[in-house]
Image 1 (cartoon, rainbow, N blue to C red):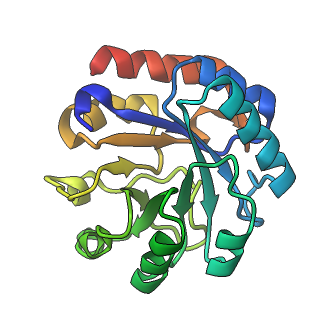
Image 2 (tube, rainbow, N blue to C red):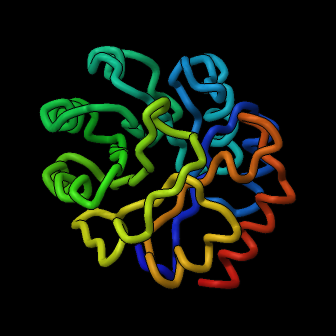
Length: 217
């Protein structure tokens, strides 16, 4: 992916209606949280409903199921009929990713890495043979994601991976220009900064964000 085609993922969608409204705005990916402790958690049945509607109406949009530290057997034996991306957002290690790649060759695997300092970016490339994209999120003591906290920009300077990388964590309108002109990730992942409450996106904020992206890129 080039910066001219920066992938935009809106994460933490909790209803079919919002998924379809946001899909109409031209996003590239929509994420649903399958982590029970998240305030944006959606049940398996709810996720299936959201993704089946997206598949029917917007088949080109990536349908991303966000999971954390769950048994491999659970992923490989449960319904994967409608998601086409699995985003690992926990402490999944290299052997976990290797086995998942082998068992689900038809599903994209995105691996999130929580960045506490510059050193944390150096282990990422070890996973490159078993994942399709890297997602860099901010490190937070209390949560694995959705905190709205930014990664320090100095940790993101001159990053290069063999797989596309997506920036998450506190992506907001006021930071957007620096992200797209200086940091230049292959994609951005937005959630809390465009919400009116957890799991409920403000469509006006979402439109403004997307319009700015189109203008800057």
